[in-house]
Image (cartoon, rainbow, N blue to C red):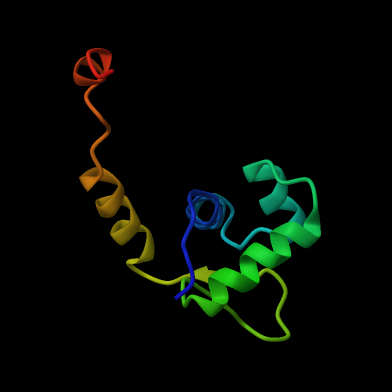
Length: 95
């Protein structure tokens, strides 16, 4: 199973926001700029990993054709809300 990291969720969120704003998907360079990745090779690796995980779909032979799977981000956001951070008060007294 492919791990969906925080960075990969950020990439999907950026693709969805960019597409909603502009009417078409971002390029690899635009994704990198949007999420703070300098290397286009690193962005391409993340995109391919998300495709293998089933989170992204790309139309072959068409530029700017990245689509985030419907429901993918809502599942990730729900999981993130269920993760509780440790209580700082209880950690102060732990020795």
